[in-house]
Image (cartoon, rainbow, N blue to C red; front, top):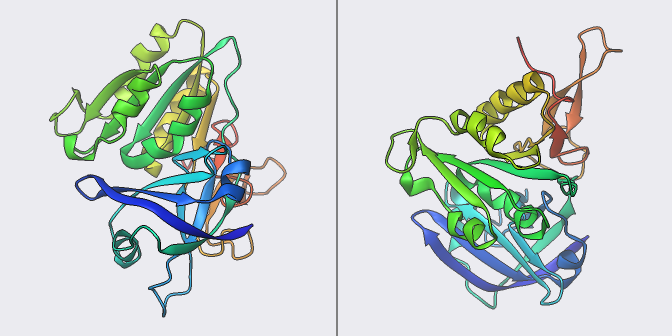
Length: 262
């Protein structure tokens, strides 16, 4: 589904991180936690490819769609200059999202950087509240922690430089979080690929249910170009793996499905 969506808000959250809200009633009515949208930025006349963004929020009653993004290149720089009242063509919702935790499960959310944006809809809609383990390079890259606290989550922070919370990697917080979970823990994660691979390996080793959002660079967003593939286990293949399109079969996979390089 594609829609011309007017911008209601486009403001700075913190540093290079920004929040944009669209009037997108058709997309908001169908969105699920963990899905994404593909946005065409009209001012990029010579660059026709859309930009993929995780859905950070959606309100079917208000008809709004929220995306959090970081200004990192020409596309997001142009998006940051757009004003309320202007429009983008938005394709979505796309991809396979996160399943909701069961009544006997405690969600343990693990996010790196602005991966926290992708898991926020699940945190807000889950009846069971749990923990957020949020890691980043420094305090400047910790965003949306207040939103999780407002949703009833125990937020635990880690920064690589020690400027906020635990000094080290966010995965180092996992052992205590699993021990503290009052019900059976289930992991939901989004962030840099090395973090996700490390978390997936740990989850498999500990026999903990885990869902990973394997975001990749995308071109078409609909499964046609195979630019966003990742390796999944496949016992029937001579190499033991096959390619899977993150825009179509993903971006969310179980840790058990993922093929981990030796």
